[in-house]
Amino acid sequence: MIGSRGGGGGAAPRPRRRSDPGDSRDLSVATTTESYNSERSVGSGGGRGTAFLDAFRSCFVSGEAQARSPETSSLSDDFHPSQQLSQSISSQGSSSGSNFEMRRSMKGLYNPMHRNSSGKEIPGSTQFSLPQIQKATKNFSPNLKIGQGGSGTVYKGQLNDGTLIAVKRAKKNVYDKHMGREFRNEIETLQCIEHLNLVRFHGYLEFGGEQLIIVEYVPNGNLREHLDCVNGKILEFSLRLDISIDVAHAVTYLHTYSDHPVIHRDIKSSNILLTNNCRAKVADFGFAKLAPTDASHVSTQVKGTAGYLDPEYLRTYQLNEKSDVYSFGVLLVELITGRRPIEPRRAIVERVTAKWAMEKFVEGNAIQTLDPNLEATDAINLAVEKTYELALQCLATTKRNRPSMRRCAEILWSIRKDFRELDIPTASLN
Ligand SMILES: Nc1ncnc2c1ncn2[C@@H]1O[C@H](COP(=O)(O)OP(=O)(O)OP(=O)(O)O)[C@@H](O)[C@H]1O
Image (cartoon, rainbow, N blue to C red):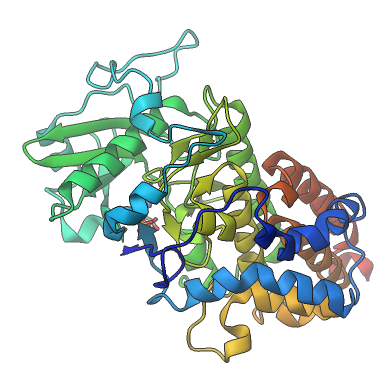
């Protein structure tokens, strides 16, 4: 985890009001019409003219700043100078950003398992004991370690009844206070949500200096590993489309349908876990935040992962659901190119993957960015064009020009429908 210094180590960003003239240079101004026209006519592709190209370049300025940060790491406020923290409190149109102020009651956390009227376990209602988790994870055996995140280590475990679990064990270090907050954040968020495409929360345990989150075990690794072909298998294009739709559904649910809208704040490929059928489940709610119900945004410290961060949020500290939409745009590009959002070892023009891919797209050369592991077909070509058209909207500099997550899901459904119609296996043509 590294701290955000407002976009990769520069001076503290100056919070802007909506009317700030600086905004007029933004991509959003140039693409307001383009974005929403294209929402209706996805897939036109082709060259888009230099004015448009110049306009959207500005959108990736902070992407380049993010690229200058050391490797691709999570950004958190742990390193935020206090001066910047105080700058992050804005008054106009914002609501208080603290989960603690908005949070729901914590009661129930330590109760034995509760079931709802249909007999299903209420998320997070199982009471665990430390010996039970120690036994399940063979006392946190290194052999059962399945992941290492910025805030802790993840272990696989098995309960007495055979249920497989993943146990996130918080790091014990000098940032204990911060980490405690992150963990509490995660459990509070996880308690409110239940969706097929979100990792299911079983329970939480805080005991003897240990902070543990117990969630469902998702057996097939994370999306980044699949894009890197770590298991030797190439992730097919159709599965990539399915995954993008699963993620869009999960985030739409968070933004729209959960009791209180939730902003995930860390949508990225290593937080997308896959089942054996390659269904996606979004994980890691450590940075999640309850969305404002009475204001357009929450003013908050910048958190997220370099390369995925909404440039407007980086600049203004103002967060709303559309920051997740930006990260989702980066994820769409990642799915098509197979590349990480920031590739420090590539030539400068290719270092910020989304910028490079969008430039190729507006030049009419989108297909040149296709993951070299995939073979281009007519169906893939068309789907790449349409997906990039959507990605470009998601990556708009200003939030108001980005589509809603629900709109993203609708567009992706239609892209998948066209893809399936065109993608006739060669064998059936003979
Ligand atoms: N429920 C789970 N089932 C299976 N594997 C998991 C589960 N949760 C996490 N993992 C694995 O552990 C890795 C680390 O997860 P974690 O959420 O702690 O960190 P991260 O998102 O990679 O990093 P950061 O916390 O810095 O954002 C994941 O990428 C995944 O491979």
